[in-house]
Length: 74
Image (cartoon, rainbow, N blue to C red; front, side, top):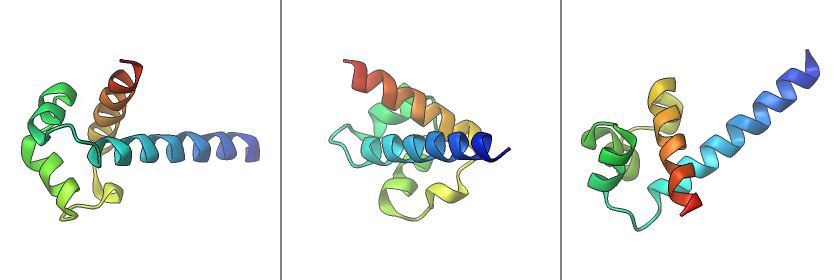
């Protein structure tokens, strides 16, 4: 159980970092919104600090993470 929890924490930390890096990047809010299939207002609120990454739905976080990974591959 402990090993599973440690792996999960590492994955969560990586996901959080990649999403944060994406939100702090020079990519426009519209491009992130379209690329991740997430509402523009959600991306905007995350960027402005109106919404915390802790409060984002898991599906939204997964979409942002997936888009961040696709951007990093380019």
